[in-house]
Length: 388
Ligand code: PLP
Image 1 (cartoon, rainbow, N blue to C red):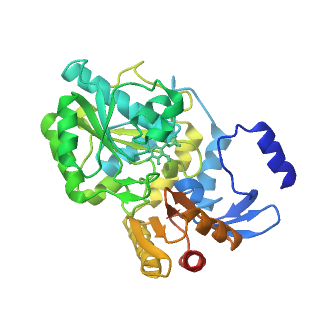
Image 2: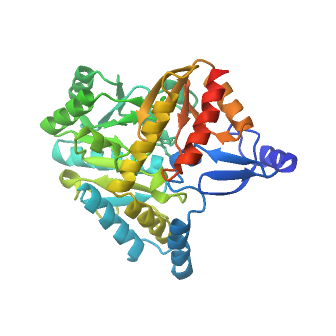
């Protein structure tokens, strides 16, 4: 550990405040450090390893693809890319998919779709994207501009212009700012993940969707963290009975390999043409083969299990000593703790559980297939850490 920690600190850009743990291997929801200590993984790489570490089915899909074709340029057709796009559309009703490599890149793509759609339909002055205060949409200069948290902006001016923030829950403000600023799109997370696992009210989400439809302003839902079964629905917007015009997704979709996607609905399906957008690694066959195996397993029965396991966690932690409240949906869970969240997480690491924070909360994003007994063992350790 000492060696690797020093090497990392000497050579890796100092952008992450790492915990003093060196993880070497894992299986499912269990991971092991260099001393062989076992941890229950309640963070799944921030919602990425949807089926845990080294899942057999995912690994089989990925390795079979590795054996035949690991990469080809987007100048040619490849099967996993086409089949994954078809599966995503069949499961959602979207019409076209653009593939990239990350959440930020998916949001960049979504924003480009909205700007081109609005420019062609209404004129080039319709470029503003309305996003919400406290949102998180990524780290590129454009997705930082979209992110409604000013402390991320300070050191990197000037950011991409054309982003205006409204308060979550304030439908009148969204409408006013969208019309005043000639908005191309409104972009929201149904649950603000990095913002503290804050769930949007159904009336607000529905109201935004109805307003966008009436004004022909695109509704983009950022499902980077909430998507791919995380909330117990395939995508979180499905919990709200709305149909966005564009969805961005990443994280869990690839199951542990970098993959992002922009799902484009009927209105904007023909907006992107040859040369309008691209990505060297976008639609990479290995990533897409893994994602296809992930998506095919997220059926109704599996999603019901995600909701049931989320309910078990909520029942165990609700009202427990040191737990002030719970938020989120399915297996995306925020815990407002009486003690500082960082202290709870540190205690959990000591006792063999890896969990995350989000603002002032402890955040749980376990693998969606975490076995119930492992999940509840972790919950007991978290509960004890909250109670201290
Ligand atoms: N959007 C949301 C809602 C996110 O939670 C994140 C990452 O946490 C991103 C976008 C950025 O994703 P990435 O880090 O893959 O670029």
